[in-house]
Length: 157
Image: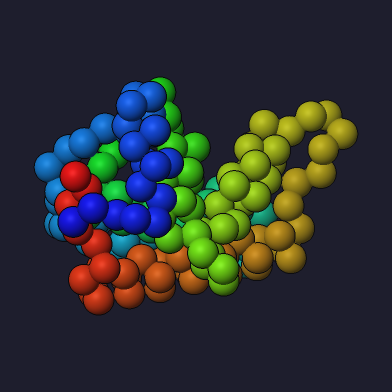
């Protein structure tokens, strides 16, 4: 199957060495989705304990793993050169239409970086920031499950 949405963007990421082709792995995709679900629940626990930065990090990781699951199912993986941004760009190009939770990936990633590597005057996340990141991550997990279960993914060619 050749993807029309995002085809040019994913091809550019492949040519640039930011993504690579691998054997499609639905078992890995399922494991990443399970990790994502656990991270969401652990984020809520961390939030309840007052660890808002940790909760935000876990919510971001949940979003990233839901996105990486979609790539794994297609036989795509980010390289060390592409990293998290390649995952973000590939999934947003393919599945980031209006109303998609993947449209928020960049914002959540940038905020996570600011909270993890703060300037001396940078405040960490508040409860509203964590709640937003968890909601986006939960929506991304739901979307990834739907795409996989509805047969909307195929091997990238």
